[in-house]
Image (cartoon, rainbow, N blue to C red):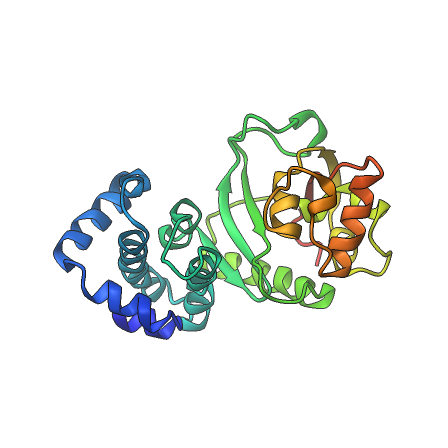
Length: 264
């Protein structure tokens, strides 16, 4: 665990705290998580959660090796562990549910984007507006934070993904890539510049519909919700334009969209 923690550039403080844990107990909890799901981490503290996720990450590396997937993809995928530790103020892991996808051999970072094997059983989706059915096999697209959202790099990611799933998961038959994100919200064009990276990224997709649920956008743009709109920060051009949009009565939201396999 410690070697992986160092490889992922976790802080010395976190590494020292992990080193103090009972490794046998961490191993037992990790085994339960991999077998029955990660709800066992609900009552664990941030450092214990981190240690369990790291242990599981080491176990899943065996699957990468058996499948012949390059180490570079493994470490790129697991780099999210540090991102989510940083998001929690460097105190360890809070959002273990999200990282359970990474250590379950279901989600892979391929260039700028992440791609997840996903059997779509989301009952909240409006399937009459989508080209696929409930329960259909998809590839779920995620956008990790921390880097510029370059259109060209995103196209390259889809091209890598086509080859990746064809080579390493040849029996996984899917027709569509699927994404639901604040980045795809159709109302974004009302306050973003036409040449913004976000709108360029959004243009890659076929838009099914949007919903005015703003939690994700508020978190990603501002960090947290404010009681009064005037209290939102204006430290970036995106914050300024989004705040002005909301003050005029606009509502942020989430877009649901898809891309056909083979498009890029």
